[in-house]
Image (tube, rainbow, N blue to C red; front, side):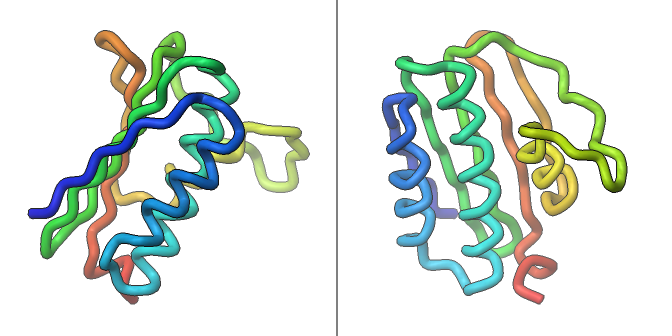
Length: 126
């Protein structure tokens, strides 16, 4: 298993920095693109809800799965309901994308808020 950890200040530049870190990982194209998209969405949420604090990004990769955790000091939350088809929303699509494309995901708020997701690599490489 390979494990990576980075910290960013919760400001808009953190999104691009996190994307860049994920892009550098040795993953096949489809898995890397999916991880990059979902990390971008979660780091964007952290920037919006924990501005000025620290964002932690942890990635674990093994032969069968990739796991990502985005951790910040924001207040915990209950995941909102998924948008309805055709619904117009100014925001709130990030967790919908995580729900849609991750094989598993969740939120832990037993301290800092941690949103995590897992992608089975055999599915994501297809």
